[in-house]
Image 1 (tube, rainbow, N blue to C red):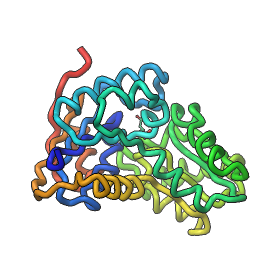
Image 2: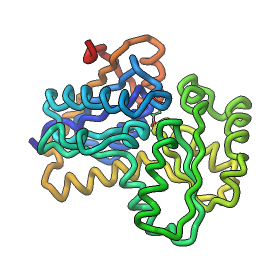
Image 3: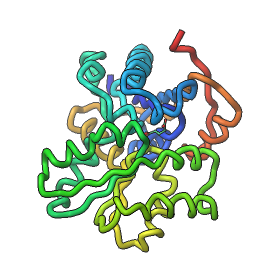
Length: 266
Ligand code: DGL
């Protein structure tokens, strides 16, 4: 079991930022990635639709004999319930939210915390609920920023157009006076610097990729599930293949890769 792959999925290619962090933190692990490019953006979908897509993808990753599964999508993580966590008895499922909550509650007392993400993530209020449960004097303010994911996918990073969109969202009064900003979308690590620059480094900008990767490493270690081989043959599947997805996927994973199309939804 310990030499089985780590299964990772997202609505599309954003989760490759998490796959990239896992590759760096756990260089001996084999990755099987699934991007549901047929149904993206999940951020615009209903809770029920996202849950149904997630169940099918998890079953696919279970059939691929993954030892753990990572929901590398905030939109899917925000609506994951016990039906999802219990689909594959015995195979641990990780989301990208809980490790960030654990990290932030250590420093959140009396602080103002901002959250930006897709409409689905913000609508779920998952960050507010989880942070408040552990730290009831923290103030949490959330803002949906739906233009950021397609902007990043199109490669608009560190350009005039991205500065304009980012400035427009971050200057929203709801984010005034924040001390921490959670980047609650797996696309956003790619604009971490641009966002930090907006705040001139005065705000703690938190993205989940490395926090999640470190949490997974600790858990695998604790359960004697770290791979003993250095087999790095990763596989990348999508529900709808296009050349442009493949190009963006390389940009997100920061390595050459091939996407393979599989139909899970017929
Ligand atoms: N990567 C997804 C997330 O973390 C955002 C993209 C989408 O809306 O599908 O929420």
